[in-house]
Image (tube, rainbow, N blue to C red; front, top):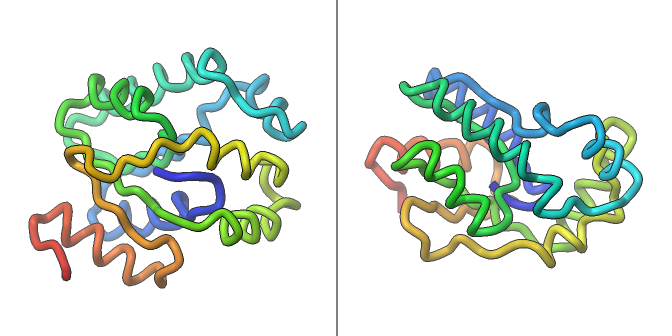
Length: 161
């Protein structure tokens, strides 16, 4: 979880592959209306996210043996809704500076629906999960192989220093 451009999809894919778990890309479940809003630079509201969070909760429940779900989960209330759907849920918080996220979102702007103008709103909405139970904070700028190793070690109870 984390703001746009932090690398959720890349890390999620790497962890899912190594851990042999299904991957659910949260962006795939946004409604057409929400995608249109984001592509126009309009930030989603809590009401806009209601149905999306319900669907993600259903995805968690549909995979009782586990899965890797990539989604922003920017607010504690969003994370708590997902935890309610799947007690014991773990979150990997991909921590990134605003400037680095902006650079990454700009670099993918030709192929992704998310407007570069929304990066600031992502940071304004973000409620850091650091200190919440079941959360691992990682530096989103580390090499992907290192991030995957940290997450896999943490998930398997062998946290790396």
